[in-house]
Image 1 (cartoon, rainbow, N blue to C red):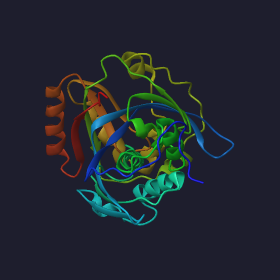
Image 2: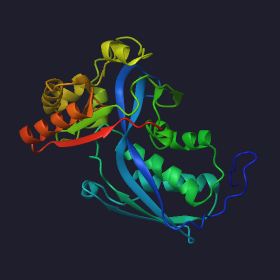
Image 3: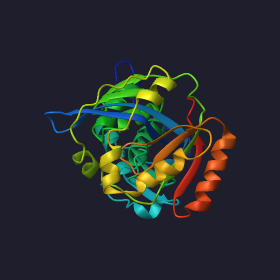
Image 4: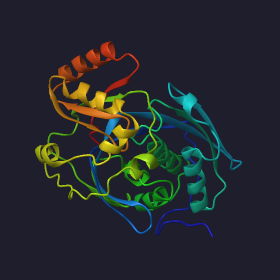
Length: 299
């Protein structure tokens, strides 16, 4: 039987032409690995924020129930539009939840590097759920969308709302948490052009619980936060250490860390001017690195 949320109207396709969503890049300002759970997942504590930069997803409704996907953009060549693509999987998951026959033609413009620790695929899946909920006028509450999202990946539920939040468990425990001064803060993203395996990085974690994540303000996050996956990621891709060293040598840096399981690293800056100067320097010194200037998303 089709599932609809209580007191919601029946789904009815929107007549809105093309709709667009941004799949905002996810940044782990800190990521503490506490232990490995009995189900094989790792118990994490992480403060997620999102940037204004992200992939672009657009879609138009089709009546035959089919899901079409075209991929372009600077990193589009790294992905296939096959059934394993997270965009298609997300669309199928929402279809299955609704029990409806609506379809869509989707286009993903891939702006973010693939397998880079900034939630590109997860953000794409979450953007797909948001876009299709609007396109199909689907009666799905946000909490339900997050439950569907968890079936697609541990980072996907947090990417549904794409707001600053504390994430615990394997990604199923979410609590919005804004830090004063963080909203709209200049941030620089740097990827050295290598992809690292999330499974390999997690398997390299030394299984030492170094304590919980406390992040009541930015200063505490800077002083006591960490990314427990940096060491195994650098073992897999030593160039990550070079990226972090280059970022930390820039003027005006408040915090520089690796995001997620890598290889993308980030730096928070005091001013736009400091960020721009750092970006110019890194592009000149490391022409093969992907360097992106953006801000922490405000909403």
